[in-house]
Amino acid sequence: MPALVLLGAQWGDEGKGKATDLLGGSVDYVVRYQGGNNAGHTVVVGDQKYALHLLPSGILSPGCVPVIGNGVVVDPSVLLSELSGLNERGVDTSRLLLSGNAHLITPYHTEVDKVTERFLGKRKIGTTGRGIGPAYADKINRVGIRVQDLFDESILTQKVEAALDFKNQVLAKLYNRRAVRTEQIVEELLGYADELRGYVADTTLILNNAVDEGKVVLFEGGQGTLLDVDHGTYPFVTSSNPTAGGACTGAGVGPTKISRVIGILKAYTTRVGAGPFPTELLDADGESLREIGGERGVTTGRDRRCGWFDAVIARYATRVNGLTDFFLTKLDVLTGWERIPVCVGYEIEGRRTDELPFSQSDFHHAKPVYEFLPGWSEDITKAKSFSDLPKNAQGYVKALEEMSGAPISAIGVGPGRDETIQINPFL
Image (cartoon, rainbow, N blue to C red; front, side, top):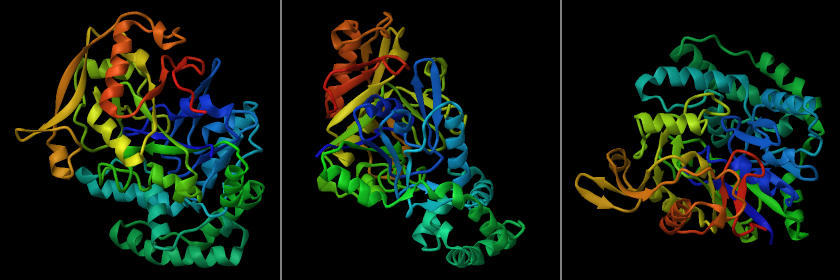
């Protein structure tokens, strides 16, 4: 059963777009199964760079069907803008399929998101302010608006009224904001209906039929394992499940149909937003990683926090996702360091642990225990096979593989589409 899940094994921004795009020529469907336009992928094709925020990376591969699954929350204005931008650059977007069960992000979701984050002050989570969390909250509270509701004005009006009954009380009485008018929201949402209608489909049925027919389906997570609402560094997480189990609920395909789970690992570690980060570097090394690696958010434009590779997190990702393979990205960024620290465990109040702490308090106080591996100075961006890498770079990869608990089957040695070493083909 050629159904694969591809997800981030750290805090996101590991290079999932490059990995998905690498597989795109051999994949029939690429499915985004969670998150919204709070995530972003950068894909380099030749001399062209594409920043994708909501669309699956497979949209850049001719013949591949990109799918936005039911687990995604969709801002219709962002989706249509992104489609328009790609069309202007000559990319065919007509193959896109959008689940009718996906929930919509409305203007009142973004308003609530922004005012809530400001209200929290020092306790803020570090959200992108794009309405993702409030949209998922409405979904769980059963007052959400789905894509299919755009095509029935009566149902849409009833649902918007129900959602605003409470939200307007909060906006007016707690945040001193003007109430949102139902008519205004309904009119705006109905304005998207005709443009979106041609993309909407029963994606669960289509995807299950595709797997049963032996077609290759790739499920693409939007953020990383440590941002999962259940398995991440709560509360500094996203509002959905980017872990492998989220692919099943977010696309409507059962777990027995998943054949391979690929985790994307950066050769060092980054994260965006607030929350614990044991290996974070607040020195010249951290700034060098940020500058050489171009570590600024595709969607937010925020500088990413940078640190050394954390094998504890990698092992945790292997465990909670059932990873079968790793794709190691940005190895080239580490070129030039004489010694490269790797976090192999944590010290917490004088105790050593090699596993991710169960307690949030312990993780906040975790100090990295480092081993130092010899670095390399040779340019590796032209390497086509593992043997082309300098011996110290080979040693670094082998050490990370042993520490992380799953084989490294591909290595990114540069930002380009063709700057990748494949050790074990994913298909």
